[in-house]
Length: 140
Image (cartoon, rainbow, N blue to C red):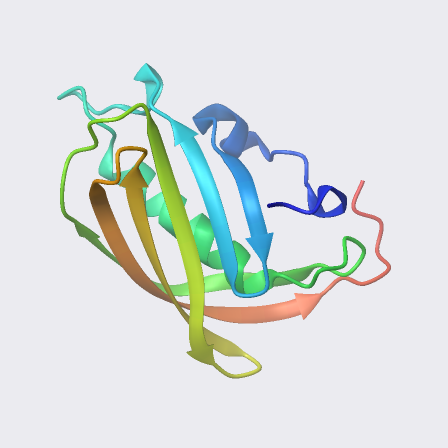
């Protein structure tokens, strides 16, 4: 469960898509995205770019966790590899990201998206570069 002190306001792109961070801890993040019409491609299914965004975001959060709302770790994606496996049948996409290794600067992750029925929709691996921390800076 997400520590309420770590809850961040949605950023504009997140607001447009509609996903929420539901769990965030050291090396782990879980997001949920409702299946709403504006995320679909012209075939009426969630756009592949949405899957990539959710996976990138969940894995990025997983590696940037500090446990301190005043000490934010920043990072950037160096590589992202997504494997599309199935079409979601449910009403919610659930993305999870996990840190799998790395060092002080470059870190490795894996992620997956399932729908709430348990169907595996997509998987991913990524490499992130940790950029710096913002302890004590005003984020508002």
